[in-house]
Image: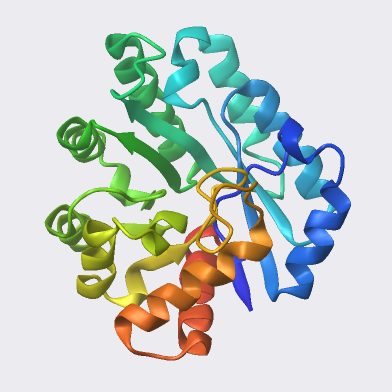
Length: 254
């Protein structure tokens, strides 16, 4: 049993074959999928998908790329959506100082406001952090985000930073890049972080693992992430599947 803890199945790249992609995931042992939003529309699309398929759950929130379009009305709409039964988190939210698609002060403002919302509605938080490690950690601490639960989605930071997050009670989510030849830093994270604090994910349709790198990613391929973790930790695939699924189910209250 595998839990793909982060996949964007609502996106246009799945419009032609979404049903087949979900069926294929089941055939490959995936029993649960979390589909986070990136803005208001994709958050609503994620909920619609979750309401159609028993195995899919949703998160709502505005990605830092889209923070420039965020406003108080949208935040209040998220508050309403957060009460729906299949909505299990706020996310993905955070900071992205690599692309800077939204001004940094705007990213910071709406990151804080969405953390505050998560605490008000008692939902855990899915974090996007790219080239903003220090500020993300600082804001999460200042806003006491760890009180409701934090997962660092598609983690790409250092093992030392990951250990700091784990000490604060957070989870570290590992995606397809762990299978890449240049993945030494992520391999070290897997070596040093206890399995009890790891999730697995695809971030579909992005970050496709080896041996399918270069093609569209999909939840069925999350097993390659689990297999790589098993190889790194020198434990069985079944143990990785069981523990990472248990971790994510507990985190998302499923």
